[in-house]
Amino acid sequence: EAGVVQSPRYKIIEKKQPVAFWCNPISGHNTLYWYLQNLGQGPELLIRYENEEAVDDSQLPKDRFSAERLKGVDSTLKIQPAELGDSAVYLCASSFRRDTEAFFGQGTRLTVV
Amino acid sequence: GENVEQHPSTLSVQEGDSAVIKCTYSDSASNYFPWYKQELGKRPQLIIDIRSNVGEKKDQRIAVTLNKTAKHFSLHITETQPEDSAVYFCAAHDSWGKLQFGAGTQVVVTP
Image (cartoon, rainbow over all chains, first blue to last red):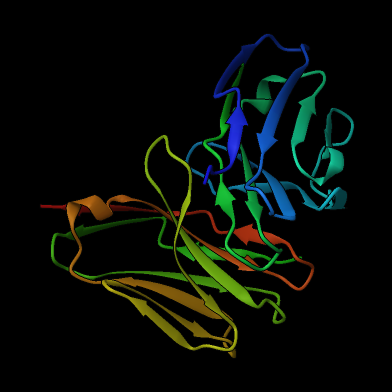
């Protein structure tokens, strides 16, 4: 069984440019998370989906970040425009339901120059 | 919302010794507490978890204890080996469904 798949693995962009990350969760997993991880720190939740509904986006900077989960499967996270401080690893995770093991993707390492 | 604090931030142990990492949480309704191991450049992976109706769980050399009254839980690694070197994160799943992580503990096992 394939795990959580994220793409791209690495992305380098200039500030003020847009960028998008894609996540394909494990089949049958209803809960999907997007986390941001800075070097040496723990993952910080950006948004959580239950099926196609964003049930917790309180920590998503909505002025520049947006996310969607079409048909309750794949998800995309977008930043427009990117800022230097957005450089980090963006992790996607999924779980069968919200209080079960969350499986992480490999992450997308974003560098904004 | 939930707040998870983790200590220590770094832990250096001799091979064969035990390592203990402690975490506290703030939401008394939190019901699920996983521990993740993250090696450099890799994804976090679950190593053990515990639910609020259990006080202790063990899997070979690792164990987790939970004290609901005090709102803290701990990871114990016995007979440490060099391959145990990594960053370990505790997490708590709060009553709102949010999975919050601690800041992590860098464990270094020296031969």
